[in-house]
Image (cartoon, rainbow, N blue to C red):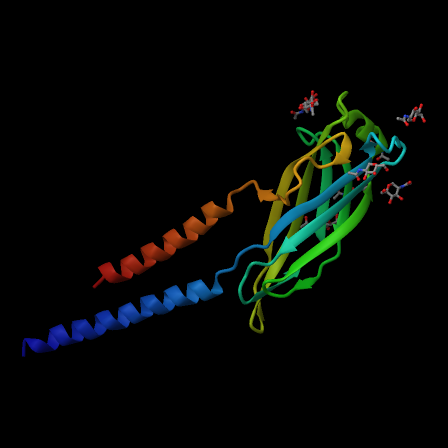
Length: 206
Ligand SMILES: *[C@@H]1O[C@H](CO)[C@@H](O)[C@H](O)[C@H]1NC(C)=O
Ligand SMILES: *[C@@H]1O[C@H](CO)[C@@H](O)[C@H](O)[C@H]1NC(C)=O
Ligand SMILES: *[C@@H]1O[C@H](CO)[C@@H](O)[C@H](O)[C@H]1NC(C)=O
Ligand SMILES: *[C@@H]1O[C@H](CO)[C@@H](O)[C@H](O)[C@H]1NC(C)=O
Ligand SMILES: *[C@@H]1O[C@H](CO)[C@@H](O)[C@H](O)[C@H]1NC(C)=O
Ligand SMILES: *[C@@H]1O[C@H](CO)[C@@H](O)[C@H](O)[C@H]1NC(C)=O
Ligand SMILES: *[C@@H]1O[C@H](CO)[C@@H](O)[C@H](O)[C@H]1NC(C)=O
Ligand SMILES: *[C@@H]1O[C@H](CO)[C@@H](O)[C@H](O)[C@H]1NC(C)=O
């Protein structure tokens, strides 16, 4: 019966194919995207030359967090924000911690906060023309809620340089995105790559 092994092989192949597809769909539905973080506002009264109040060492900043996942909520751990003078993070000027919270899928959250910066460093950071450069770093960990289940913690380490003009405000009016030093894109590619090679291996086996 020459038919028999062929039929069995075909059956096996379709089984493997289904397995591969299932794995692909599982991966697609379990895949999570880190939230996107923006600095919307960054204002230092002491650098506002119209105000003429160098005694005020406050920084007013507004952070926006966007959960872009279609159907996954996010539990944030406490969010640590650190502010340094530019360019090489040699001086810690101040820090602020936003308490952890839960954010539903496709939701945005904003936090408008005031933090007191180190006065000495602040006066040193200003260039003669009234502008200044800073560095903001954000560190936290997030867990994703997939239906009733919580994933393990994923570290989130992002930051950006901020340029402030002589009105005390950040130069670029647009939302300023905080980016990760280690590319997220690279990690995504690695995940995708290992999945593709797994599926290929399974197919090549038969
Ligand atoms: C700077 O100070 C002036 C005078 O108080 C105020 O009108 C202006 O809005 C301030 N600039 C910014 C960017 O807040
Ligand atoms: C800013 O304040 C200083 C000291 O208080 C004063 O001498 C100066 O005239 C003020 N400048 C403006 C533009 O108001
Ligand atoms: C500094 O400026 C901020 C923003 O204008 C204000 O909320 C804060 O009360 C000021 N701080 C002092 C000590 O005047
Ligand atoms: C940071 O910058 C300061 C002043 O520009 C410089 O003296 C110091 O060596 C720099 N440190 C590093 C680690 O680059
Ligand atoms: C935050 O700032 C406080 C005082 O400004 C300092 O004692 C503390 O070590 C800082 N924390 C971090 C994580 O840098
Ligand atoms: C501000 O920074 C200077 C220089 O790093 C440091 O000597 C001073 O202790 C700091 N002040 C505060 C209140 O942290
Ligand atoms: C102000 O001075 C700094 C440093 O010299 C320079 O990088 C910046 O471009 C200047 N900004 C303006 C608006 O001239
Ligand atoms: C945030 O800061 C707190 C207190 O300094 C620290 O215990 C915690 O590990 C920090 N979180 C992250 C993600 O760095």
